Length: 101
Image 1 (cartoon, rainbow, N blue to C red):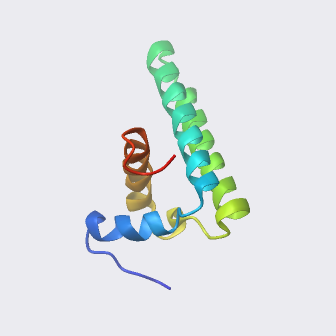
Image 2: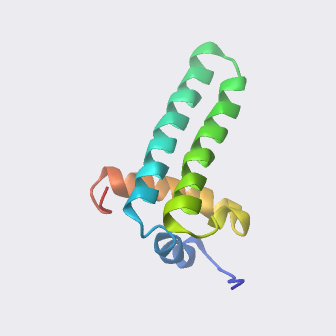
């Protein structure tokens, strides 16, 4: 199922389909919140190691959601840039109530 996407707008519906499980979405949300906290810590302390923590925490929570709840392979492996953008658009959509938390 190697799908080529010509734009993020074309990719995002596919991305949402890969996040149908509510627990998976919640884990993404928690991981993103922790990642934002670590990024803020990096800015406050001027210590770039916090950015590594941000990446690890964000992806760790997301991948647990995919492997144990969604039972699929994260889109990050085939579409890393679109997937990263999708994480943040989905985060915003969850914050604004567009997607059920």
